[in-house]
Length: 226
Image (cartoon, rainbow, N blue to C red; front, side, top):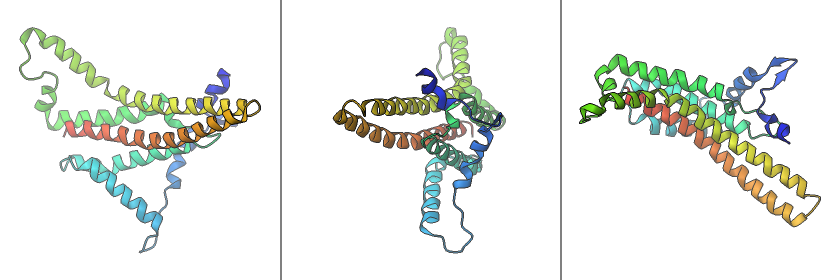
């Protein structure tokens, strides 16, 4: 049972070679593009959603911060498509791997922090010591603020990993319960199957929300340092 429960989180291999890279590169291929002057409804809806999302995230930024708009839009599209593809049967979700989420969070966080120290060194250092702090508490507060700064990328990665992993585990458990009850009690099976459908709808929403939250937090870190 335990082996089957966590089997979907094991990185797949093809002929002994890791296939995670191919899976990560697959979602961008699903984004439709148009070569015509007049777009169809799908392309128009896609462009409207991208403009709406980028407008919400980049409104608070100055000119320097808005240079990250393409990167942030690409990030939210990548995470959202990866999360949604992971809901398909017999598929693998790269965002359930903490190593991959750290690989996304650390460079983006480090880039924002380095930009802040380069452009606004005084404001960046001021975050380590709130105004009006009593003198005896200064060393302790500096240590606490430093730890809180360094833990930001870990919090980003762990939040995304736990939310996606928990949803997949819950769907797996309820799906197994539905299959086991199908030969015992039909009314109970229908009730559990209804719960599974509702949970699947919830997981689709969670997949999109977690992509937005991850990107929004990166945008907030960028805003604090520009």
